[in-house]
Length: 248
View 1 (cartoon, helix red, strand yellow):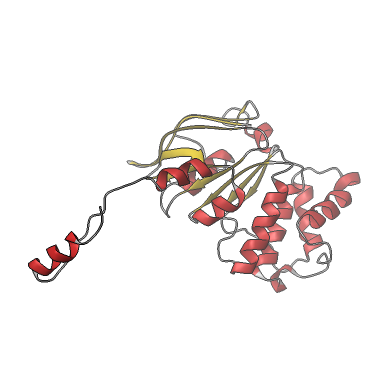
View 2 (cartoon, rainbow, N blue to C red):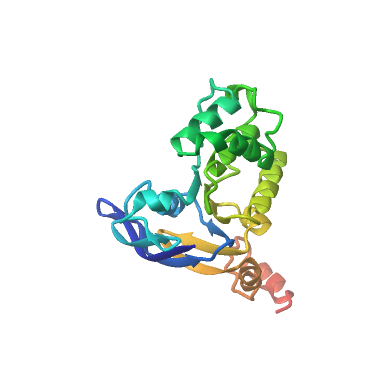
């Protein structure tokens, strides 16, 4: 579904993403994990065509997003980190407006709106004003909007940011359900989120992929023996005495 080859994005002299290459298969759920500033959001914006790459090629379903951006975007549903919503509209009004922008045919629009609301747990919320919804339900509205045009690929940037623990569990369950029908790429800085919803994870550091494997293999690697470096302040003799009593 996704092929990324030698992707680089520069902002002035600084490379936010540097020579990144990876593939994502059909119906695969992949997490991009890394601290704030690692380049996660930049990669998500590059994948959606929101910004152009400085170097490299991105193909969505075989279509070069740099050469044919409109054709590639038709296959993508994108939930940005801070999902922009018109908070004075009702849920149905907003979804109808967005469906029109996405080119959903008029004779299918209401069916798609109802289907997406059911998929995201908004079946009884169509008449509610978005500004009166909780953060978790506003996130569901954003997810419903990404599904309106029946995309093959969902790109979710920090989908649970700012949610309380119950809302996070609910959104993660929803993403697992969507993974049965869509390819999903999500970014996060929370390891437990990757464990909960992803089959594979790419760890990003300073714009580079430093590890890529299944969650199980990466966890096994983290459990491998390592070296502990400690600084201890106190009487030298007592410290050595206590250290000598430790096994290993």
